Image 1: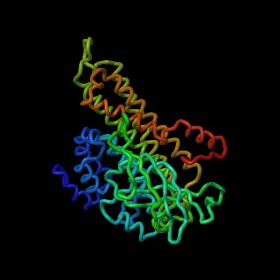
Image 2: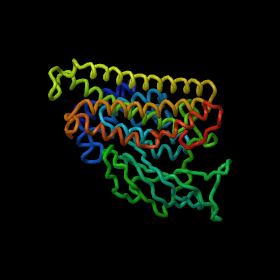
Image 3: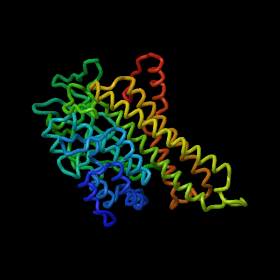
Image 4: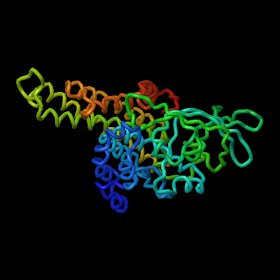
Amino acid sequence: MSAALDVTELSRTRTDPVARARAIAPVIEAASQRIEQSKALTPEVLDALHGAALFRTLLPRAYNGEQVTPATFFRMQEVIAAADGSTGWCLCQASGCSFAAAYMAPEAAWDIWGDPRAVVAWGFGQGVAKVVPGGYRVSGTWRFASGNRHATWVGGHCRIEEPDGSIRLDKDGAVFERTMMVRRDVPHWHDEWNVVGLCGTNSDTYTITDVFVPEAYSVTRDVDEERRVQAPLYQFTTTNLYASGFAGVSLGIARGMLDAFVAMARGKTAAAMTKPMRESEVIQNGIAQCEAKLRSAGAWLVEVLDEAHEVATARGHITMHERAMIRLATTSAIHRAKEVAEWAYHEAGATAIFDNSPFERRMRDIHASAQQVQGRTAHLEMCGQHFLGMNPAGRFF
C-alpha cells in the first residue's frame, strides 16, 4: 500500500468516489512517468485505486460494488485522467467490464468479483465458442486488453457455434455474441503494445485455444432477457458507460494539460518577447476559451447523463433519444478536449517538447484516446439521423 496515503480509511468511510479520486490523484501523478516507462500501473497506484474502491463503482451493490450514477462515474474518470491518462484509461476499461456482472449468474459473478482487488480486462476481436455439454470450448484472438497486467480475469467476445456447426443468431437475425470469462493466466499473451500514446495501458493481444468455459462463466450484455440486476444504472448500455468514461478520460487529460499551461504561463516569458506570457492578450483569450470548452463539455455531459438516469428511474429503461444525446455529448467532449490540449501544447512553445514536461506525454495520450472508437466522427452522423426522424443503427450508439 502507498506510504503517501492511507487509502483504507477512504474506502471505509465511503465518501463520494470523486472525492476519493481527488485524494489519490497526487499518488498517481507522481508515478506517471514510471507508468509510461514500464507499460503498467505501479504497485502504489494499484494500491491507491483498490484502497479507494474505484474499480468497483459500476459493479452492482449485490457484489459489494458501489453502483454509482453515470454522471458520478464520468466525473471520477475525469479526475483520475487529469493525473495520468493511462491510469484513467485502465480504470474506465475495467469499470466497463464490471458492468457485465449485472448480467451474469450470481455464483460466477461472486467468483470473479468477490476478491476486493478483482479486475477484469478484455479487448476487441471475435472468437468462436463451440457448444458442448455444460458450456463451451473457446478459441480466438483479441486485441487491446487495456490493464491486463493487473487483471485477475479476462473476457473474450465470441460467436456461438451450435453442435451442428451453425452459428447462433439473435432474434433480429444478427450473429449472437457472448463473452467468455477465464482467469488471467489462461490465455497466451502477445507483447505487441508498441504505441506513441497511452503506453501505460499495456493493451496487449491475447489468444485462447480450445479452452472449456462453463455456461455460468459466459455473459451477453445489453439484452433485457439476460439482465439480472434491474437498477437504473443497468438500463444504460455498456457503450453508454464506456463512452461516458472515455469522454472523462479525454477531458481529464486536457484539464491536466491546461492547468499545467496556466501554471507555466504565470511565470514564463517566451523567447524574444518583452513581457510575460500572462500579460499576452492571445494567451489570456486562449485560456478563457479553453476553460469554456472544457467546462461546458463536462457540464453538458453531466446534464445529459442525469436526465437519462431520471428517465431510467421513472420508466425502467432509456429510449433512443437518451442514447443519441449521450453519444453526441460524449463524442463532442472527446473532440473539444483534443482542441484544448493542442492549443496548450502549441502555445507552450519549446517547453512542451521535452519528455519531462507536463505536456509531451499528455499530447500523445490525448491523440491516442481520440483515435479510439468512442471518438469517431461518424458517430455524429447517427445522431443527426436521429434528430431528422430516421432510425440510426450502429453498434456504438
